[in-house]
Length: 290
Image (cartoon, rainbow, N blue to C red):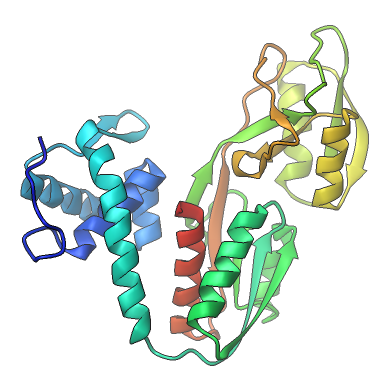
């Protein structure tokens, strides 16, 4: 059992150990947590071992593709979150004032809650900074960063040497609540008219599996795409976090292939102020992990 301790009186682990634990727990993967924390995988593993030694417990079960919380880890998670929020609030009282302007590009599949949390949290803390947020297809964000049109962007796509993923989630097949997947019919697809993975992945995967398909709806607009799904006109793919109660994840996978995970990477301009970039990154990560 986890030994009793007061995390506020100095007898418990320091905030760095708790933050490392919290990020690993939220990511479910040490490698992904290391990317979020801008540390090496080995450094993150060392921090977790130090915390486990201090608490005299095992906090994670190590799996082939990641980690999962033990019973003791589940007990610690809400406590760690509360402590870290308190520390962040105190830090914000004495943080450096951010001024000027900042232009941020985010994926248009981010749900309203994430967007509202990012805006509310960041603007509350940094009232003297002028923030402009652009929502849209992320395929154009790398060029926008290079041209100096954006200071920070979230890119949805395969990570590369210059794109280290900070968040990965499942990509799922979605349909309207009344839509039935028939094994003997051609799959009706809604696809994005964009030069990105969201256009090619569903057709490529169905082709690999030998499943017949036809495009019944094409759009550049994310809201219009979801409307086509809701109406029962077609099925499509979305990151799991973008699925709301108006549509459903297709559980009957007999005729639908597996999909690659959705990865998010930060891109930032070399000309942007580092403290401003880091502050916005933290706000986005807090929204994703809350």
